[in-house]
Amino acid sequence: MTDEPPKMDRRRFCGQSVWGLCLAGIGGLSGYLLGRTRQPETRWQIDPTKCIACGNCATYCVLEPSAVKCVQAYKICAYCDFCPGFLEPGARLDTGAENELCPTGAITRHFVEEPYFEYNILDELCIGCGKCVKGCEAFGNASLFLQVHHDRCVNCNECAIAAACPSDAFVRVPVDRPYLLKGVEEHA
Image (cartoon, rainbow, N blue to C red; front, top):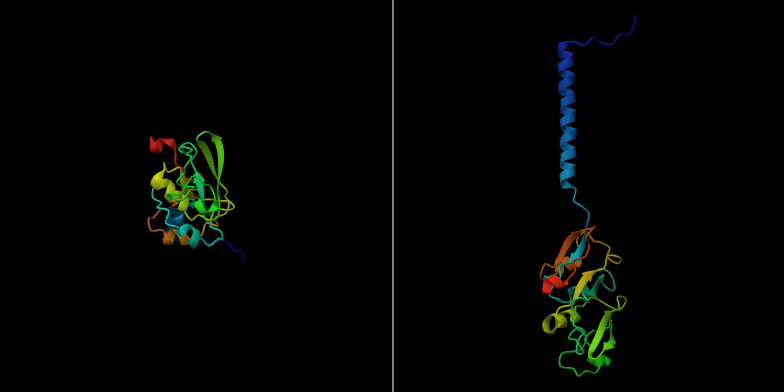
């Protein structure tokens, strides 16, 4: 006796065809649903147009110090002798620590020429409290703003700062454009 494969008849052909179509349909549907749920890779960032410098970035980040740091838009800065982001409101032009707005001394001031000064932020000292940003927004030209530094951020699935942000300034941005920067065109 030889083992011959069963002959293909019409009933067997139709049954196998329906079974094959069902498997193909399930595979196609699975691929479609998987492709639909896949999100492009994103990172957390602060939208500087929405940020109110509330101070939550310094206290709610899971990192110590916060991954949020102050950034200076040099193209917008007026290089003021009295910088409202550097000195306390109403303070004399005395750069003593008691007159500086930053609680950690993260902003440095360098003479350029009379009456101009350049202000730089030391990332290692900045805690993301936003006091300088608030001063610059209220009395200056808003050249200081907060941004998430991605070399520090762990990209939490549910960012604690985003959950605590009262102005919904924390947004997801594409990895290929991780920073939302201020420019001269916004202030023209």
